[in-house]
Image 1 (spheres, one colour):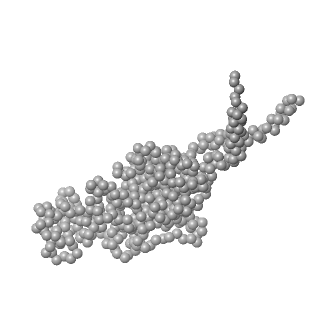
Image 2 (tube, rainbow over the protein chains, first blue to last red):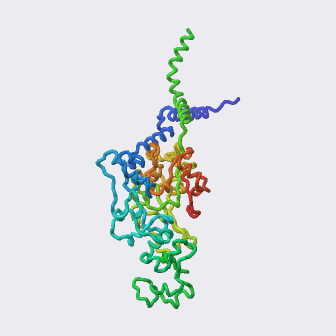
Image 3 (tube, each protein chain N blue to C red):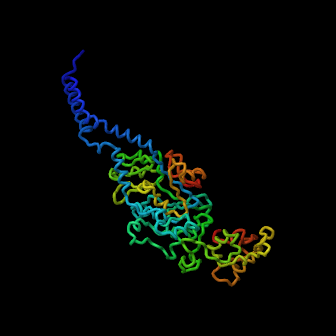
Length: 243
Length: 247
């Protein structure tokens, strides 16, 4: 067997020496906390767990407040947590001197209940400009039991979706009977006798024609606008802005 | 004589041996523990047709997690989708500070419109974890993706890699930050802040493994979808009533 040249042997010794130094540092000198990812992750998780809590959670309020949570649980707002309206309350639990907010201004409830086309159909919404202007919501509605105040309901009892839509449209001031004639028979047997609908263009024209004397309504020329179509075939009268 | 020597040597070596084997012993003990009490696997359900776009979740998240107030920094946010009659999709961010202002422009040809709450999807195969060069972001045993903000160096790879745009660079710590499912709350049995304040139960939180959690009930009763399923990230945020246009 041929002997390796001396220079190569020396080089190999140097390489081996360097490698052993590196391995020594890596496995003996460096502390485990620098090399082990598990320790890092563990400490990150621990730091995460130590973060302070702001929202106390939905169950804890009832330990002191008895009436409001019970009322809340029985009403339309039963899915709300106290902190949805009253804000983060852990500070109140730590120190009773701190009082969570109790919003009473008129601009608070519309955060959820103002009309917004992206909101799901059927969710109760109002137009804050037309809906009892300037009155705080709490005058008529108890936020813990938000039943709408007792108002005489006629058409709305069955046609709630139309009523809600009309409530946020420019036709909010028009009563149903302005355009529809519903007999008593319709209330008893809704399908036996149906209410009337405007059957000619002149009916809408009584407000919207050029020669009508209403103010602040859009006026059009009945002779040239829309041809032979009836108005409601293009414009939805319960929400005329929509089309 | 020889036996005594051997015994002496062994007793001397025993502490050294335990030190050497200690990590293995601890690992074994951990395995036994996890077997004894199975860890939860956290997930969230989002019922899109219940979201009213009130923005309570966004505000609660900011209050709970010290998220900076700017609308560019969000751990959870709500998008407004407007699909017009040309089938064009307009997406806008719900403004959390001035919540009532974000209205649809006078677009008269709206086909349909709705809100979609979004947050970190806590993927089972998280792309952000793959790209992190210093292993600062990782998945915990209970399925939550966390960021070690002492190890993170703020390179922003994960922010680029997240297909859901769920991460942002925290302006104070200069590290990546994202939704943790409120890890400090859920480990105490509380709900995440956004779920806690959601008025319509559009957000549902629970343990995916438990047969009794509200999330399991949701998965049983509703048709479930996830965002960008083709990426095979396996999100743990499950959507119901999700429109096909939502990306």
